[in-house]
Image (cartoon, each protein chain N blue to C red):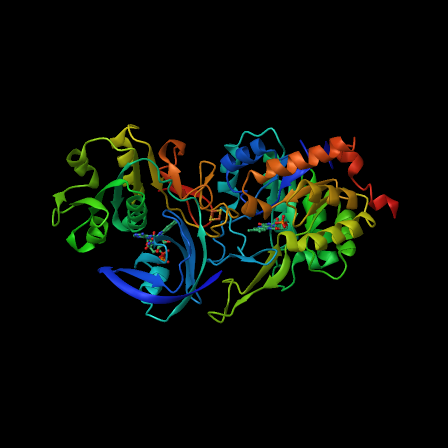
Length: 295
Length: 247
Ligand SMILES: Cc1cc2nc3c(=O)[nH]c(=O)nc-3n(C[C@H](O)[C@H](O)[C@H](O)COP(=O)(O)OP(=O)(O)OC[C@H]3O[C@@H](n4cnc5c(N)ncnc54)[C@H](O)[C@@H]3O)c2cc1C
Ligand SMILES: Cc1cc2nc3c(=O)[nH]c(=O)nc-3n(C[C@H](O)[C@H](O)[C@H](O)COP(=O)(O)O)c2cc1C
Ligand code: FES
């Protein structure tokens, strides 16, 4: 299947930040049935991230504040060089302004089949994330699109009043697709020790609890933009994938379910999705928007 | 996260203490927990008892854990990870340094299963030796120290000749190069399980920081069959940024 020029083997893509650090893991995920891979979000320079606790289980999922740890673009491209994949590799990048993001995109384009822009990173000098401001999104995506020689996916944060405004800005900036959602802001206090659990105090929620939020974002985006949408958030079964496709997604990304179910969960999700499609005599492409278009 | 209160503190050797908790966590030998002290940090620690851990003070988190007293609170995410598989009727346990901690728990369970247990321990010097008497409750114990101040002089592998014979299973935990030497010394004659350590940020198979050759130490391990391991065993790890560096 082809989504925004990305030749996916099936609609299941590894989401950014989960396991996407090692070429050996990419190979293992492909073998388990993944249709594409998004890497950890990579920056110009290496970043250690926050000290543990960085991931804590909560009802319905996990809270995380990793602090975007990554080995930096040079070391990471060495790692990518060791991968021999037959599924598309999408490199996630972040930076604090349009210039830095464009430099990253320029650097990684020759090594991948697409780039995903993680727009949930704070803007240089500002408190808000780039992805919370439509003007910034438009200009960052536009510089990235100019620098890119591969399709550009803009990854949207749900921590905004109206995600369609941001989706439109990404489309106007020249994104080939959008992916949604990144994690939902959240925090937890441990009452036994009377202290916030995450070392960064607050972080982002993912897992089954965010699925209805991701669904609503995809549904709304599907009514507002023309470019393909990659649905993310709380998927853990083939049925969840069907639901996102029906809402308007062309493909999906998987994350937290790999922690709870292990890498084998990918195989179960792919088999569940394929069984559903063959029982209903339908295809991934035909499923996409099948319910959205009724409205 | 589970709430814990320290029920007992047992000094084992200079800088090494066992903490026993108010609750049995139902852990199995080889499993670990992500132990968290508010305002200090969180680190993986193997269970040395079903309700306890044994900590060596080497840095900020282990030092803070080591100075806890009875009644102090902490939290844990766990038990996590794949335990040792306890099989057969005789077992050879090989431990070095604080890797001896999980072996105590393993020896106890092997003994409860009626297995014949023999344990080889390697330390730097006499002062570092711990769990020697504890382990002797479950079977014969042989000790080696690098400076010869206790038991045989040399690395733990020098004790192999003393315990020649056949065993159904061998288990090892300790410094990784020691474990690699144990694997080489056994030469595949006995099925060997090794318990590995890597920098862990999540302990839940999500972040990838503990990855080695496509395996996740927190989720696929920390206990592995020696035959499962790739070239990174004894040679490479990932640093806090996720970059692969020499061990
Ligand atoms: C699965 C697993 C099980 C573990 N089980 C135990 C256990 O049962 N008991 C225990 O004490 N620790 C155990 N550890 C190690 C523990 O998680 C920490 O790495 C260690 O306590 C150091 O943390 P720190 O914050 O005190 O020091 P850090 O600041 O993280 O480290 C301080 C310095 O000590 C070095 N260092 C780290 N670990 C050791 C060590 N064990 N011996 C000597 N130097 C070291 C580091 O490289 C660093 O230079 C385990 C680790 C893993 C992954
Ligand atoms: C541990 C962890 C790390 C993450 N790191 C990143 C990251 O580096 N970049 C990014 O764009 N999203 C990151 N995310 C967000 C995920 O890509 C995804 O958008 C979110 O988790 C929702 O999907 P899920 O419910 O299937 O996990 C991370 C999520 C988790 C749980
Ligand atoms: S510690 Fe995060 S995947 Fe193992």
